[in-house]
Length: 422
Image (cartoon, rainbow, N blue to C red; front, side, top):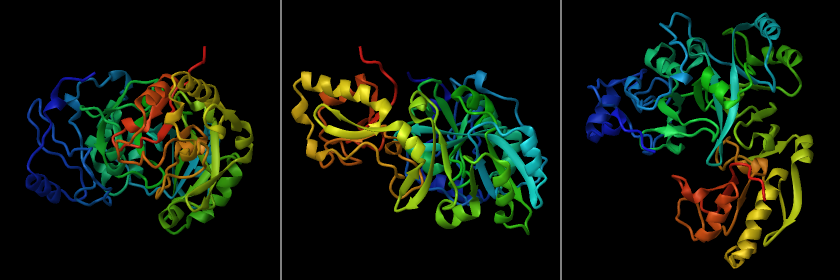
């Protein structure tokens, strides 16, 4: 449902004017003066790329927070106040499966060469086949680790505290925003308003919310750390002691290696996906193995991945949670005399542990929760030729269809909610 209000009259000024404004702002947020009921915005649906922190186009704001209609105060925390700390550089990011307790944090702070530690919650949300790293933070303290001059920008952190979402511009481009810039993170909570587009900690954090949102999403409290080292101390001096203090399943990622390789090739990665399919994924750990592929924990594979025979497609390998709904959907397709609309030879698989091409972002295929049908005639960015009767049946059985996305993927169906066959 459309949310009427100030964001409906968004600024769409001439390109030359917007370019001039962007050029005039170096190392800060694009803050345009707005009259009542008027909002300055760079369109988050337009093609964009993340700029380096400090560049003129590095940050844009979809809306002026006080005028946002539909912003729920239940998801707000106290505003952070003025920034009085020293900015820090995050050198290592840690994600554990459980809360990292106070004693462990204190021991890590005491490691020689550690300058500061920030505890927060790190979780993963799946949006249109992209698994995003979402940090649920205390805006007053986490801001120290934001890139460039962003720690000093008060409006960014006031917006996060008020319950808005902060993301990089490239991520914002791919979010399924409604016309008032709200986006669903999971089906269990209301949509959140996209309030800030700003660079995040590269390849470690895609988006930031406050702790109230983290609680609502089901984040594990305090399961992650940002560790800042002294300037003269290389991160590998710190990772050794860290490894001894944290559970074996923890991800300890050096961000200098991320900058060099796209991610730390020596780190075990962790995904704790929230939402209706969280039980189907559980805690997912993996290692990158090159070529865009990953090697999930063999124990996770044994517990979650299965090969079974289903109607039309025959033998397929998927997450065990998919099979009841997949089998029910395909049976209904047969009963609806639509089986010939699925070309068995054009099925491209379900479980495929990999990143999305050209990225370090996990695909839902990594969890065995998605399948691709009739591939040649249903390429990305096209309307495709998928029979709408098949689409409707899959939707009834809890699958989302990639043909509905802003950047379409009509071959793609992914499990979005659990439905019990009658």
